[in-house]
Image 1: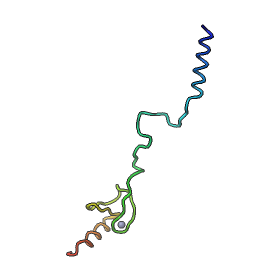
Image 2 (image 1 turned 180 degrees about the horizontal axis):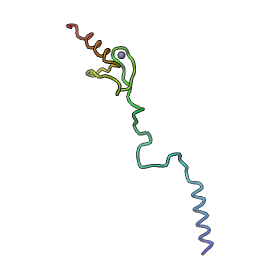
Image 3 (image 1 turned 60 degrees about the horizontal axis):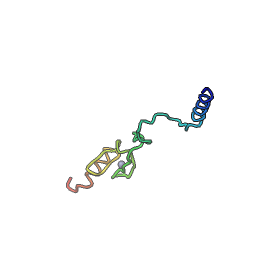
Length: 82
Ligand SMILES: [Zn+2]
């Protein structure tokens, strides 16, 4: 019986030694790459073409702008009657 326990202990030890190792342990079912603030949609300024994060952009309708000045310039440009 003692021999059986020794074999069981050795098998458990081998399994423990051969287990896959991962740098980060928590696997709570969350996606591998959660959407973080660092990875967000980039939009293009309709005035100068600058690409910037959507959160930093100013929106006017379906157009995005890098600054309030460009938003105003674009708006005044599109309306001939000022
Ligand atoms: Zn711009």
